[in-house]
Amino acid sequence: MKQEFRWGYAIFVLLLLSILGFISVGILSLFAGIDVESLTGNVAIIPIEGVIVGSENDFLFESAAVSKDIIELVEKADENANIKAIILEINSPGGSAVASEEIANAVKKTNKTTVALIREAGASGAYWIASASDHIIASRVSITGSIGVIASYLEFPGFLEEYNVTYRRLVSGKYKDIGSPLKEMTPEEEEIFQKNLDLIGDYFAGEVAKNRNMSKKDVDKIANGLFYLGVQAKELGLVDELGGKDEAVAYIERREGIKAEVVEYKTEKGLLEILTGVFSKQSFFVGKGIGSSLLDRKSVSSLSITT
Image (tube, rainbow, N blue to C red; front, side):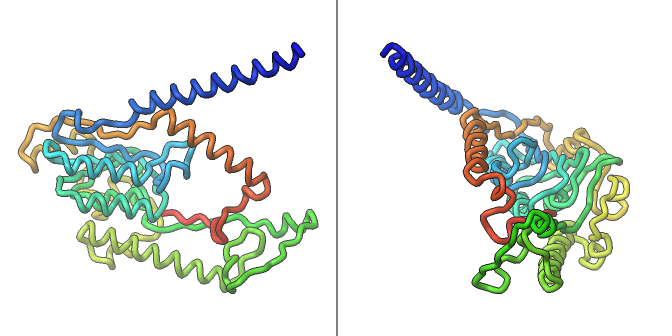
């Protein structure tokens, strides 16, 4: 009887502590984020750091530039009458083609002067974003360019055969399981993927040409996936100026005729968001199981397409 009481009491205490923990996290999360209205300054710096993704759930444990967060910051800076210019401080190797395009479009829509400041890297999708700005500044040794698209996926048919596991194909629609890692990709399927990649790559190059006021023909010559150092990129017309933050501020002061007062616009995750992301991600993989976690919920999800 006493043992049952102890167990009941222990469970009650654990539940109470859990409830108090969630309440505490909720209260702390109210103070998270950024209140841009309370910030003073006339030049907004917006960091674009890490792999460019569409959702924070895409990259949980690594630094990521989430398109919706960056777009929100660009829009808030655009709406703030005190802000005269925006510096995009870029340190990213690229990422999602869709997310990169979304951010680039938001940059083009703003009425403020925009400067892309490329730090260590501003390549591929990150360069797509930079090209949408009014002025691009990079270090002599910054890594930039890399105009192109890459797709990759893993195949497991040999592994399954070794362990006597059979992939039984049941589909409605000839290409429904295209890109499935459980079977070898046919030459026809590979050709289909390559055509789509070429379309995305051509669109990418076309956007760079428009944004940089270059001919499509000239961009096509360098849209081969190669990266360029800042000094090379300037010679190719991909960068306007070599330098760093001081040069970015000086450009804005000349163009706007102001004394720049820089303020950083940055989204901070609350504890509730962090814990929710961790718990939801772990629950997702536990629920799917080790084997099924190798596959996504869609037939083509095993194929990763990035800029």
